[in-house]
Length: 148
Image 1 (spheres, rainbow, N blue to C red):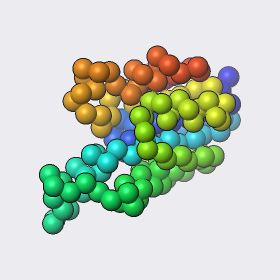
Image 2 (cartoon, one colour; image 1 turned 90 degrees about the vertical axis):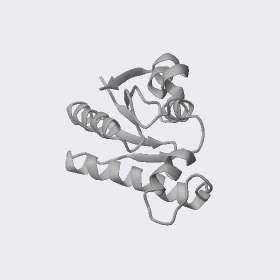
Image 3 (cartoon, rainbow, N blue to C red; image 1 turned 120 degrees about the vertical axis):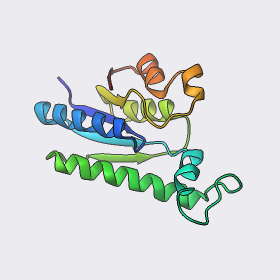
Image 4 (cartoon, rainbow, N blue to C red; image 1 turned 180 degrees about the vertical axis):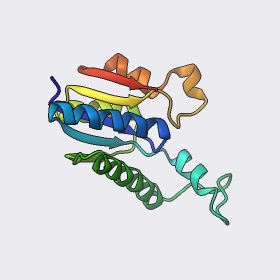
């Protein structure tokens, strides 16, 4: 039923739950598993603000810091997949609108399922404008699964 599954990760517990469910499905269908992360500099700045001496209000992270934070999220996703007995076929990180990046990657690898967490680390504006998951569900050309 599913040959290629793409999972959108943002580092939230909800996205980890979505990944675990995707791993279960990948095991059942012997599907390839791909992880996609779209780093958001403001989210990285907020996370780095917990580190002493880093002033999020006045300093945005450097591109290398954003890249490194994104790599950590993808590596953590690969570790979760390994714990679930799955190997990650592909990892992708790209700046941009998260839903568009996830959909574009899914189209590029001919995915037949996209799995996302329903509520991740999105901003308050997502409550008004709509979430990444809502946009993926609306625009994707394959099946979508939203995980609570």
